[in-house]
Length: 209
Picture 1 (cartoon, rainbow, N blue to C red):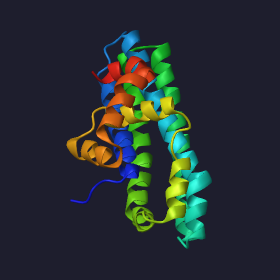
Picture 2: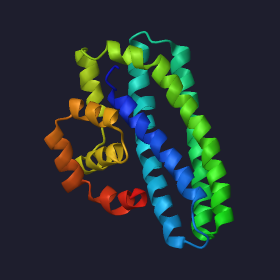
Picture 3: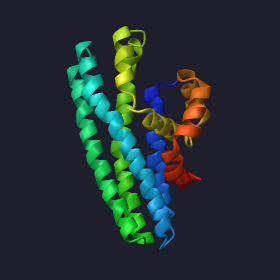
């Protein structure tokens, strides 16, 4: 089985968070305002990470791939799917906000349905990207310009990078964790996750424990 790329590791974290957000909403006890706030905090983190990922692709990666001969229609489809995902995420965020305002089991069930519909939009895009864009990306791994550009796709600060790494690992399977440590040295991952990623450990991680 081929090793996962960083892009695929991020996608796995997205799929995982969307699925467990839906599950958490379906299991939300009636009147549990604290649990509703926890779920929203985790969802907001997902939206933040995914927004950064997609903005970097739209602004940096797709123009580069276009210049390297990747099909323009494919890249336009990627941008269009990003726009559809943004709309789906916004709808889910509004539904989850409603659960925080009125933490009832019925409101949570409605929000879970919205997240489920959002999941269809999200997963269709992730599957499409992995099917049609991963190969061109793989062909560029040894390209010096692509290596330089890849640095621009990373989070802007060490703290943001640490929180992103903590998110990618939270609930990840062995395949994702092995691939991550093959890309970034294990001690670096550990230090950033355990020492620097305080926001994630404080605000998000408790949601999934």
